[in-house]
Length: 103
Image (tube, rainbow, N blue to C red):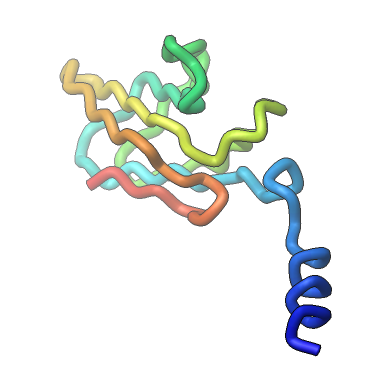
């Protein structure tokens, strides 16, 4: 009976492709974020600036959908601020968090 229950639970688990990949990026640094990049672990570049022509002032947040159809849950984040400082965080599991805060 234990095997049957385990099989039922496994069949109800969502595949990685169906996981929610939306993350709220919060800027609490005291500086305006002028660029933000999020690249999956299978990528060898930062790709495009997700903020585009927008900026993220300190005290603000933005919801970003990281679903790039790759199936990856682990992403590297890079934030660039108005003073030129860059903060990089590697291996962020976007399938397990809903908010990421820069302090």
